Image 1 (cartoon, rainbow, N blue to C red):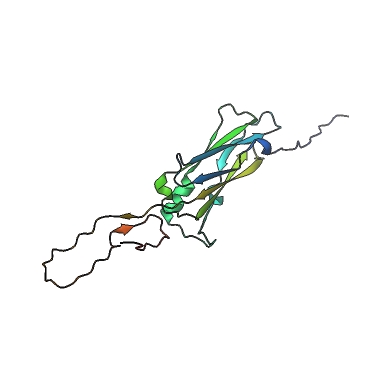
Image 2 (image 1 turned 60 degrees about the horizontal axis):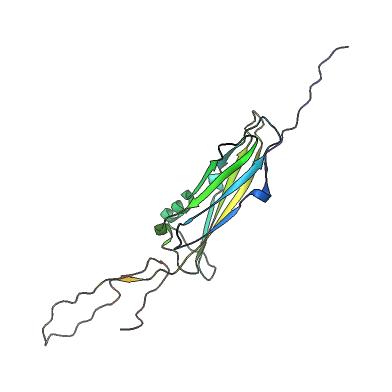
Length: 193
């Protein structure tokens, strides 16, 4: 009796080595450098696999809140800067085991709008795929970045009054006409003259 017996071998997805993985980072506006980084460590029992990583951009979430916990609206440019600050890169020695390095880096000007007590939470999802033909198994890791705002001082430039003669009529000046504050939710007022 002769015959051929076939059996399906199980496909094992890569696994995240949680104990060695950095899944969060924090930044405070005004610190230098405005950067945090970490590593996602993975292992795949299939020795011939060489897992690769990709950022699941559609799953990226950016939220901002004011000091009282209400939602802080973000402009398209602000949201874009916060999303594009996250970068991943594989370790050059990766095989069926290895690591993916992540970095989150911003410029101070990207956060100037954020006032003291306001926070941003940015969540990124990284997919680690084993690349096996036809049965692409994968694992996912979430990285969360928390950003705290600080109080930026208002700026004022000199006010020039029009030329007046001694007996001219009274006139008024708005002393806040040339004042500004990059913290967009702050309200300026005069406390002393």
